[in-house]
View 1 (tube, rainbow, N blue to C red):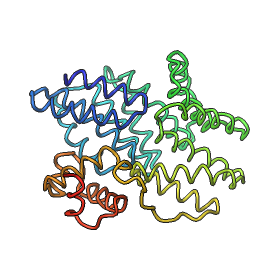
View 2 (view 1 turned 90 degrees about the vertical axis):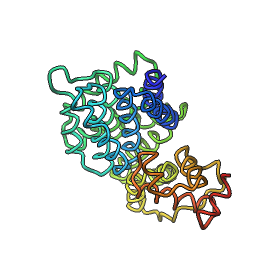
View 3 (view 1 turned 120 degrees about the horizontal axis):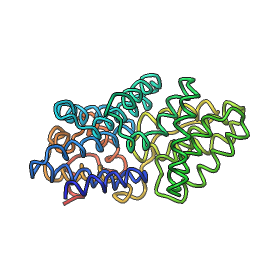
View 4 (view 1 turned 180 degrees about the vertical axis):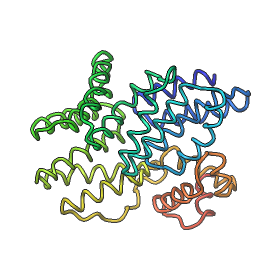
Length: 319
C-alpha cells in the first residue's frame, strides 16, 4: 500500500492536483512508518516537501527536506534525491532567487547515475522559469523542447498548458507571448490546476504591465492574488499583490470567506480537527511536518475565514 500510494501521489502531482497528492503522500507516510518501510517513507516526505515548496512555504519544505536528506544520502536514493533538488529550486523561485534555483536544477541534472528522467521532465517548467529569469534562454529552450515533446505525446492539457506558459516566458515578441499565455489559460481552465493557473496569470500580467497594458493586467492579477491567498501561498500572493499595485490597483485586506468550513483547504481542516482534539501548535506541527510558524499562520487564516476568536470556539465547530 505505501508503494501504491507513492505512484498515486506522483500521478496527482503530474496533473497538478495538489490536494490529492498531499492526501496520498500523508497516508503513505503514515503507513510507511507504521510498517517500517523507510525508503518509501522518504519518497512520501519528498512529495510533501515539494507541495510545500510549490506554495512558497519554505519553512515547512525545509523541515520535510531535513527529515528526508539523511536517508537519501546514506542509502543513495535516486528519486527522492532528485525531488529534493526540485523542492529547493521551487522554494528559491518563490523567494525570488532564480539563480539559486538554477544551481539546484544543475545538481539534479548532473552526476553519473543520479539523473532521474521522470522527475527532471516533471520539473522542466520550473527550470524554464528559472533559466529565463537568469537570461539563460538557450538552456530554457532546450528543456522546453523535451518537455513539449512529452506534453504533445501525452495529450495532457495540464502539460500542454505549462508548455505554452514556457513559450510565453521565452517569447521575444509581445504578440507571440500573448498568444501562448492565452492558450495556456484556456488549457488550464479545463483541469483542476488552479494554483498553476494563478502562476500563469501572474507571468502573463507581468508581461502585459511591462508592455504598458496595465488595464488588461489588473484583472488577471486580482484573480491570481485571490487564488494564492486561498492556497495560503504567501510569497506568491505578495508577489502578485506587488504587481497589482504597480499596475495601479489597490490591494485590499484578506476578506472573510463566506463559505465557512467549505472554503478551508484539506490541510486547514486537518489542523482544525487536531485543535478540537486538544493538540498544541507544536504537536500539530510535529504531526503534520509543518513549522510552528506555518501552523500559526494557518490558524490566523482559519479564525478569519470561520469568524471565530478562540481555539475553544474553533474546537466546538469540529466536534
